[in-house]
Image 1 (cartoon, rainbow, N blue to C red):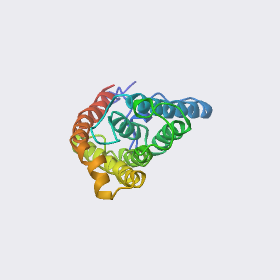
Image 2 (image 1 turned 60 degrees about the vertical axis):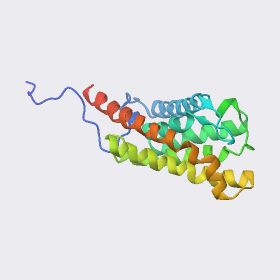
Image 3 (image 1 turned 45 degrees about the vertical axis):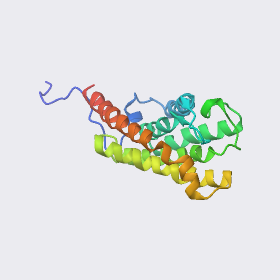
Image 4 (image 1 turned 120 degrees about the horizontal axis):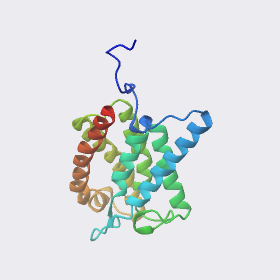
Length: 203
């Protein structure tokens, strides 16, 4: 006889990220194929979001959706898969796949440092998500801020070197004009990620 305390849903294990809640593969090969599909999908999502682009007057760095996508991919996939997804995005774009901002590709662009920073940010936000940072609004905002700082920590110095300008000038070109947009992205993540966890827990 079944007990009344049996729950309808399986408890979510500690250290899980959103991607871990997808149906499990029955074989090791299937699990590997699933991970590859998630990583390729994360790279493709970032590439698609990069086409949502608006030029900033006087700056070689456009406002795009790829930063937000990269942070979400890292958070949803976890450290290992997040790094692999954004690493694939970086390497394929450098090799010629036109999925950087505004359909560009290659390795000579001054803004490439930001794309390199995506890999670092994906690893960081993935590690924080494994510790539950995406399950409450305030912790999600903190994870997004730290991930964004990781992107700028690579992107702004790279921009300074590429343009042969002082670091302060690179910050004027590639940091300060984007802070308001970054704040809006953090607010959006604050609502979307904890809501996703709530919905999945009810499923």
